[in-house]
Image 1 (cartoon, helix red, strand yellow):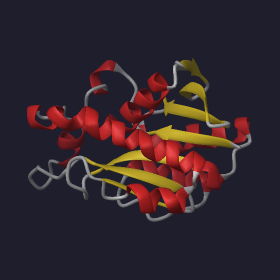
Image 2: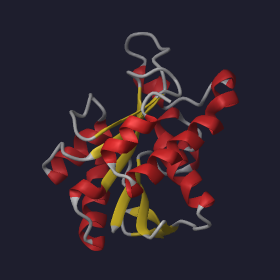
Image 3: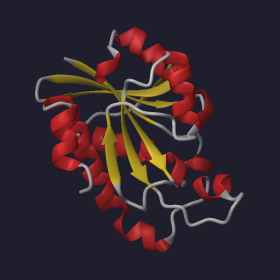
Image 4: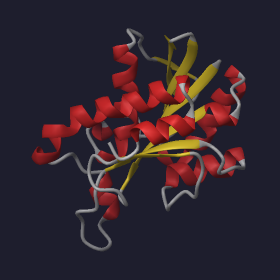
Length: 187
């Protein structure tokens, strides 16, 4: 069994510690835990890991958030991974900070990365793990907020929440979407 885990974010140091890059942070934590490393390749930084007999391909698209679909589609084709074995990890302002919620399908919720993936793969039928970043911003300030860095208060529990998010990856690739949602959603 082979899986594609996509952490959404923007490439470059200036975005590294922003809320929008939480997808990158989660896949980086998983890759480090598995003793693997990322290498730059076509459209993404890519790592390969083995977990309980599963082959897991993890990517951090280098296409910038709004063009994430290009990287997802390329690696789906290159690695011959079906849509049902793809998990996209993204930030979500509709969830309070640190709240994690996995779904098997759904709309893009106004998220440009998800919007592009759905346009390119022509489906909403893929799993996504939404990592709550909260919505502590004034009307019209959404972009500044998600491209802003974590608050000192958020930093206190960020590592623990990222660790929980890596458990979703393990569950998705071993026991499947349904059981992972049952076991881990709202933890």
